[in-house]
Image (cartoon, rainbow, N blue to C red; front, side, top):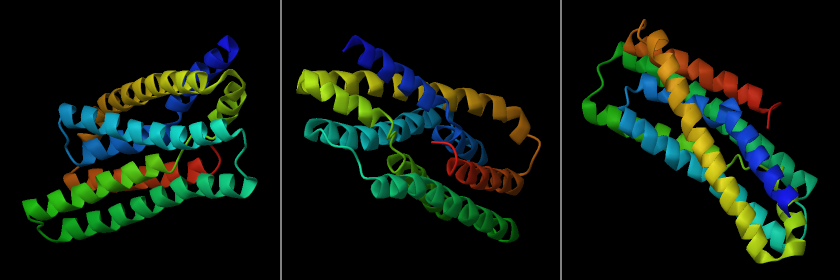
Length: 203
């Protein structure tokens, strides 16, 4: 059981380093001029969405002692990248439109909420399927041990994603400062598409 716990913590750390878990949010925070407090809140919420998607499947299949079918795994691996690419393309098109017309403050707020929902959905649809084998292995030790793995996975992964998001946002500050508001949005849109394409190959 100790080895399962160590493997779970290690996997949670590795997952937190994957760019599609923190790069979209850190880029969006710069193009939308979020405060540090809002970025911290959104990073925590989106990291929780990722963990929730992982644990809902992991605990369910761990208790049942069965694995996901290959077809279902394929659907899950495709869902998040597709959402991210669509999000990036839409963000780019709206950035062009906003550069040509004057958007009101209320319109910008409504659009901003849509982007937050899109990122949340992307994180929810990108569960860590690799951790499910650990939950299934823990089933031999009882439900309490499955929940113990879930707790450690959640704490380590959420902390890692939030930390990486904040570090990436801080690093990107100087880079984004060189561009206009429309330029920042276009850069973010291209990053979203690139991360989405890369996500087809990196899980």
